[in-house]
Image 1 (cartoon, helix red, strand yellow):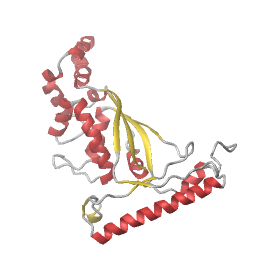
Image 2 (cartoon, rainbow, N blue to C red; image 1 turned 180 degrees about the vertical axis):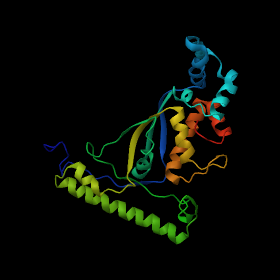
Image 3 (cartoon, rainbow, N blue to C red; image 1 turned 180 degrees about the horizontal axis):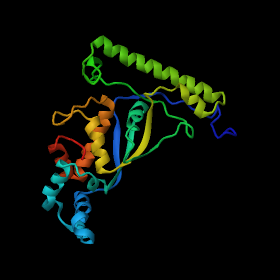
Image 4 (cartoon, rainbow, N blue to C red; image 1 turned 120 degrees about the vertical axis):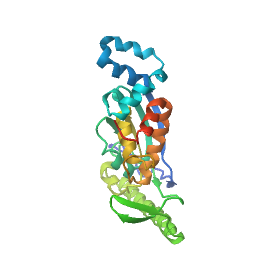
Amino acid sequence: MSDTGQATPAERITPAAKFRSDVTVELVQSAAQDSDVVWSARVSTSGEKSIDAQHEDANESKGLINFLMKNRHGTPFEHNSMTFMVSAPIFVFREFHRHRVGWSYNEESGRYRELAPVFYVPGPDRKLVQIGKAGHYEFIDGTAEQSRIVHEATIRACESSYAAYQEMLDAGVAREVARGVLPVSTFSTMYATCNARSLMAFLSLRTKDEASAFPSYPQREIEMVAELMEAEFAKLMPITHACFVANGRVCP
């Protein structure tokens, strides 16, 4: 081990590159249930007695939750918390970090650890061709030749860039400098913490759904993350989620 804490060339074993077409989302911890919406809303009319609603069956207050959602009374949806561990390509996180209100992030650091050669390559079902203008476009399937080019070019570029990364590390270059050659398709891991309101704002923008009152055109890869988060949200707060969908997937 060198004085900088990095492995020496003799100590470093370069792993083979891995290519993935998926993302992963794990619910790490949560304090989120439908009754949280009820008691936090009832403080407006019941004051300190609203705390009693913590022990009520939220199913008896579906109407209240739907009223709050429909009329966009949003603050009662903020008194809860969900923390997710997300593994996805870096370009997904660059879009993710545009969601700042009601979100907290901690991401894997390329300064403090050597990044693994794990890269995203579009799968065979990824639509490759964009048609239409910005703000109102669709993606359609590519040809077999386009799919081949994307697959082979992505693998070639990732392997080449990781070789350059390893070359610099072997020469004693700091990790924070060497990482500059890695592509945004490199996988990273982060923790993302939100509340139901901030998550619904994210879902309304990062999923494409015919039930949405307002159309959205998310990049497929961040939509994959959003879909997995929404599945966890629906399990934790089924009434809130159902009201979100019923009211056009509009964040209150």
